[in-house]
Image 1 (spheres, rainbow, N blue to C red):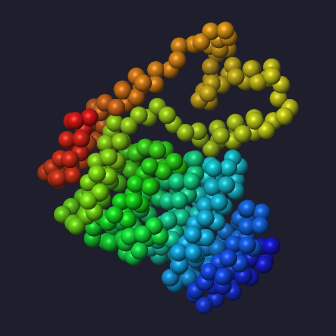
Image 2 (cartoon, one colour; image 1 turned 180 degrees about the vertical axis):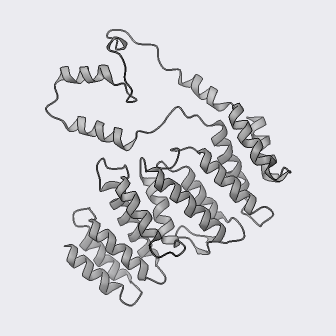
Image 3 (cartoon, rainbow, N blue to C red; image 1 turned 90 degrees about the horizontal axis):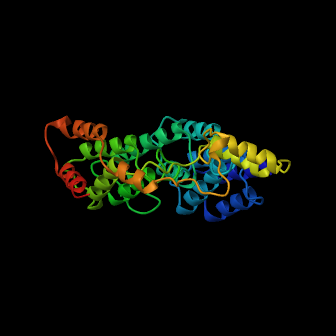
Length: 313
């Protein structure tokens, strides 16, 4: 199967172009079992390297197939492994050229699809995004263009998708690194003809970092693997289950046997109180914000909008 796919891929990419019929043949050959093998994933990247102007059909197949390989090949499914993250980073970097928009779409889609991703991939994604926004040119797959001298609507969409991705630095919320990225992009494009939604995205993104609740965090890949293995273990007895329960709580931390109560409810976690406490800007966060606003000895229009938002909130 893999040899047939590789042969089809090499033939299709021989002239630097690939049509819809060839893409359909690759799809049918690669996906009879719903899985993409490592050799097939490598062959798909080789084809992408050879295509001068990727079509919408090719971009769809490229991202769909490789997201499936990167996110769902290793167990537990949905958690990107270190090996797959390393492979993707090396594959995008291999030719030393600026990342193509097709490759950028792949990295962003992986973070959107994954429940969790290694820090190396999250940092790489942020670097690619910054590079694309500040230097990229051309139409994106989702519509709109990248321009190196301003932030377009298409670039706002890419930024929003990346910083709020489920597999991002802080799932469904903005991390400090992502907030710092927003500040750098703001400083690099001050006075440019930016998209109207850029100010809102900057304010919402930085405001989310400063006021967002951090109490709900996703499972790590290792913890998810342990839970999945436990669910598949048909030899476990009820007694063993309760013994393990006595040692590990729902967050994976140790707890004493005496903390488990039967017949009565323990006091529930005060999630509302935690959320309110996180909503307030802390002294450390204020110092972080002041340092960025004071960096150029002036308060620009976007910083004024951010300060108004924080005051009103």
